[in-house]
Image (cartoon, rainbow, N blue to C red; front, side, top):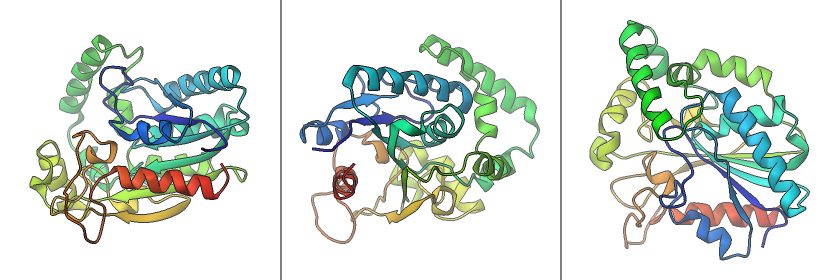
Amino acid sequence: MLKYPILFVHGMGFRDRKLINYWGHIPKIFIDDDNRVFYGCQDSNGTIEDNAYTLKERIEKIILATGAEKLNVIAHSKGGLDMRYAICQLGTAPYVASLTTINTPHNGSKTIDAILTLPQLPIKLGSGCTDLWMRILDDKAPHTYKTIQSFSTGFARQFNQDNPDEPDIYYQSYACIMNKNISDIFMLIPYSVVKMIEGENDGFLTPDGVMHGDFKGIIKSNSGRGISHCDEVDMRRRRFTKKSGDGVSDILELYREILQTLKDKEF
């Protein structure tokens, strides 16, 4: 059992729902170890700033309800940026013991840089349609176009300058990569585009784009598919392979490693 409860913070495009858990079987690993588990409940496509305010309120409520001094935060994708802003800009640093991020665009994406040089009208129109759909799915203030802009390398440089790591918080990060474009049908097109522009990736982001704090390296599967952006949060709800070998056969192995690291550091 960990010293502090766990707060899971989801990425873009999804919400925390009871019936369809963004994190699949992952929370059960921590619950079975007698840890208290909570969720960020921020908007799917909200801006970093708006989502950070939601996270601040969630953290304050959790601290009040549990009596815990701090929380361990595990964030996927954009959720890591939402959390870093909440830590640095909104005064939640005293309540965070650790921040673990999985494929969070800390350093931005050169692919997004390239996309933002294209005519923006179609992207803005598509973003507007997405915002309407996200409102139907309960987002309070979706802003897909602004969110896409926050993945550029220029934004990342300024964000990192404005939101430096807090010395009393332990930051660790992980990267994952797919082995081929057909590894995950949902990631086929974005993986191929990012591969052409930047190199190996998880369907959205490269290892260089997600390194931050204590970088734990690239997590690979021991199957031919690799690990996609969706696999990182157990979207398929099943292991990669039953075979043994170099790499992980189930994404749950990564989270067991995270749990053990937090235990070793007495968080």
